[in-house]
Length: 267
Ligand SMILES: [Fe+2]
Ligand SMILES: [Fe+2]
Image (cartoon, rainbow, N blue to C red):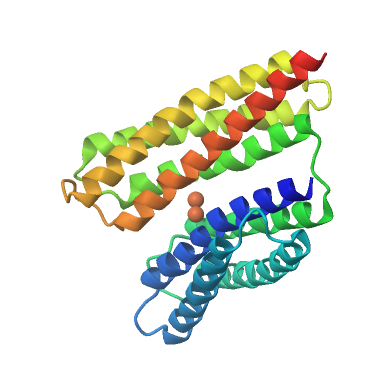
């Protein structure tokens, strides 16, 4: 059990600390050059999460669980701080105090939601309080479907408007995921009656199909951006970043599907 705790913790911290590190870079790139204090703060977070990422790779599954528990608490504190920073930046943008900056409010809100998710994950791990499977399936999907819908919107806005075909594809993904998100919220509202195995299984299957095609679209976009074959203001690392988050969602869906099947076998 404690070995499982170490493996789960390292997996979450390795994935999300890299994500937090990259958010610091993206925010920094979106600030105006005169916002030196914000740029400096973003740089500090970059280094903090770079260090955390490095340390997470130095641990192994044989590391003492108590040491990992302390490490998780340390990471939790850093994530809380970056969350506060992101919400502060969101407030500044919304109050028009950073005119001409390049961070969309929805993007800043989005990265703060990801920080909040990471923080909750660390709390769940350290307290050992994991949600029951039917609740986790709905909640994780509501979270990630919204993240995917946001990504489609960001891609659509950061591509050059002259890339009409790709912009249209991004817009279609945005609509598709908005619809899936509303379906997920409907299913959530019908809890606990909606938490039957056939409904949850179908829910995962349907989401999986759309996530696979969005993941493939992101992969294509990433490759085109890297090869400088399309016009956009998307940083190549951002293209890779949103691709990795789609892969993460797929990994979680697969895990849920395996758990559901295992439950069936047991019944
Ligand atoms: Fe992200
Ligand atoms: Fe994201």
